[in-house]
Image (cartoon, rainbow, N blue to C red; front, side, top):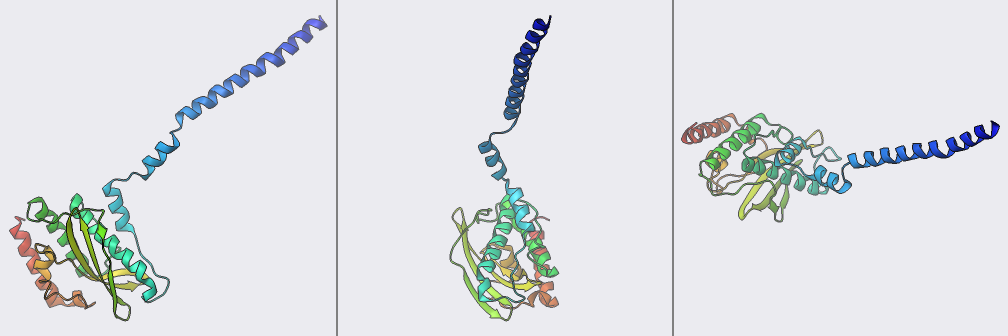
Length: 232
């Protein structure tokens, strides 16, 4: 009897742990099968739609370490300008409404930029613009110069699918965050060209321009005329 019990105990130690080990291996195999391949997962995570990128650009802010702008901030100034160009032109090309609140604090300039985007999109849809617009623009050498204390001018040449443009902007800083004080593309059939003036006349050097009520009224009156001509 004792011999039979001993044989049963030895059998249990050998067989049952083996069964348990087989179950664990199978369970772990199933878990691995349910996990995505790391390469596929990384590729999926890095793939973003144009809308996602536009939303990221719209929410991005650019800060400087000091209270005032200096030549040491030129790299940040350039990155800020490029981000705005990509946001605006990407929104035109993809026919998306975006927010410029992180880039423009002046109410009049922001409302103008919103309306310029809307009308440029409409004009593009109607075939009234020969310019190609898109998100991934190729930039040339930026021209940067200090206009006055805490105010920089930057001229950014860029192109998208063969269409070359130049964006001229004034940049200042508020609470260490970069902001646009003025902007101008000035393309031949551009909304801003029609509303704010011909390139030969339009100067980009006045940070208080969009506080000039008479000038702003004239701009929005011309925008209204453009909107009517587009059938709105």
